[in-house]
Length: 242
Length: 320
Image (cartoon, rainbow over all chains, first blue to last red; front, side, top):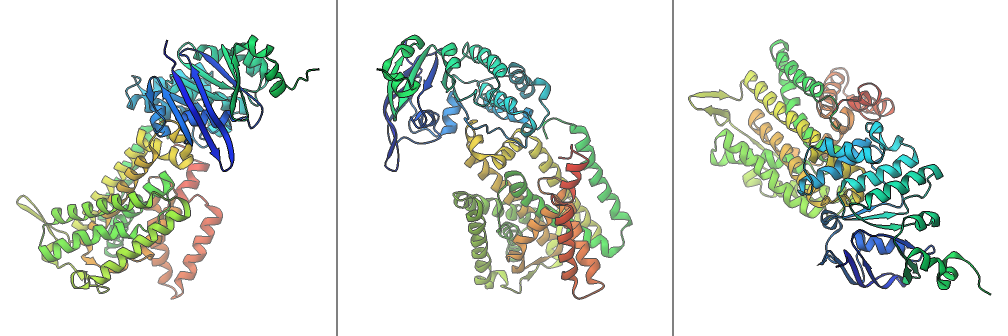
């Protein structure tokens, strides 16, 4: 089977800092992949390169067999690469409805979905449990609901690859359980790339885990393999070995 | 703005148009003439509001789009003897093309730089008008003669210098632009424009080419302002370089801020208010600008979102 996403020698420098350093990465369709690593390891920079929010210094990104390295972010979104933000950035002054209507009408314009805007919006809001808050201003929603709205917007883009950047940050434990169920459901129709600090969430959700450290991939494997990997424990889990 | 109460919104707008129509038959001559002028200039304000209110781009150069329409229509009538509809179309085309060219350049900037760039282009436009004084009349301007301002429609002919014809023509233009504006801001495209105003980076990450959307908005805005300018030349018969000066870039900003930014009817309210404050106060004192200034300060204090903007925020959330 051909990978949905491949990067070859992907690098990005910020001044003298090599935030992402020659990363070769492959993601199979249908997978839930978690990306973990200590702060500053280059995780967010890596997914920003994939989504097109920033341009790479060198290297190549291939999505579904096509080289997308030089495509602007909006064009990648239209191919099915959706990114949800680490820091919640819903449109605070618009209603939840309008927030989701924007991605829904985009997919309608691109011919990637059919039907009325209203039906598409309500479907995405219902999947995330926000339907009864459709006409609330997004900025007035609770933090947890804003995170869910962010996911609803990602879903409404009909992504083939959904990138979730620290989605459970700031959520209560009860909200996290619902969230895990939601991501599992999303994974039925999309490939998920998840940056996450909460290890129980990672261990429950991920099919495979990629560990970043200092801009490079330190290790990659199933949750069991990663848990057992001594290098990872040194770099990230903070365990000391005698 | 989504799909809440479309019927209410359209009813209100049609009601305003009906009211303006009825006023034509009851207003005394002086106010009748003034209101015709206000409606044409409210179109200018609506064009400005399209870009400033809905996309959040503050231009300080919209006088150039207004005067592109003014001169595009005025010069073709004056020098080439074009008919009224052809001259109006020429004015509209000049404004739209100028907006496309300026947009391509100015949209490479944002924020304060955008303000400065648009203002500089408008100054260039102003100086070009003065430079070609042989054609434009320089700072004296041109008066379009009465025989050139007759609209021939089949066998009928309408004299645009007749007060009632002038008022109804102004109302027709105003109504069309008002309804078009309402349709745009309620459309999918309008939703994208507001999203760009609220958070451009996020809008890109939802798959929107924000540059193209902004460019289209500049062209629509420029075309509406040019329509206002072209109508002004044909209805009031004066084509002057003062309309290209920086003052006429600031005025639509003031009108929109007063009436209510990003409201469809705000531009009319703001233009009306400003005109009548000047009109009433200048009847009492030569220091009327002092009173205008005080009125503006009071408005900013008590109606920070403009007259309609504050009404929408406090009482009528459904106003488009």
